[in-house]
Each structure stands twice: as C-alpha cells, then as structure tokens.
Amino acid sequence: MVYRLYFRIYNRMTQKKLQKQSMYAEYDEDGDGIVSDEELSHVADIKKLEHDLRKQRAQRRMATASLVAMASFTIAMFFVDLERVKALADISNLFYLTGGGIVSVYMGASAIMNRNGK
Ligand SMILES: [Ca+2]
Image 1 (cartoon, helix red, strand yellow):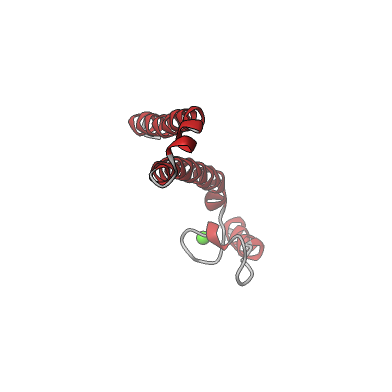
Image 2 (spheres, helix red, strand yellow):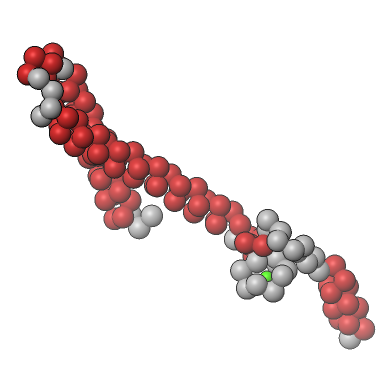
C-alpha cells in the first residue's frame, strides 16, 4: 500500500513533459503533453510509414513527369520541320520507350503493392 503510493508519487515526479512547440509533440498521440512509452513505440512505425509515403510520392512524380514529357515532346514535334524530326527519330524512339517503361513499371508496382495490402 505504502509502496504503491510511493510508486505513484515517483511516477508523477519522473514524468517528462514536452517543452512548448517541441519537435516531439507530433508523437504525443492523445495530446496530453506527455509522450508515453507506448507512444514512443509508435515512432518507428510512423517514421517507416512517412518514408514509404515519400518514396511513393517520388515515384508517382517521376511517372507523371515522364507522361508530361512524352506529351509535350509529341506536341513539340508538330512545330519542328520534317528534317529535324527525321534526325531526332532514333532519340525520340528511345525516349518514348523509356518513358513508357517508367510509367508501366510504376503502374505495375503500385498494382502489386495494392494487392499485397502494403
Ligand atoms: Ca500522450
């Protein structure tokens, strides 16, 4: 009984509160100003999730940029004279193949990840 009371007092004394506008405030899930052990244990999961989201966003941007580049290249070809288009034919073929490859790999990978529930 005395031990339990002592433990509660000790617990209250050692509880660490966050300073104002702390960078760790985002880990305080219930907003009581204290990051508990349980909340700290979620930090690794949150960090991994944020990392995955950043990676997905970068991949999506890359695929979008490839689509936009291919579209604008195609539109630009209408305003270039025929000799230059013929001269660029080899390069533009590779350009379309790699652009299409990037987009199709992105779509395939996101479809597989959705199926796996990740
Ligand atoms: Ca808390």
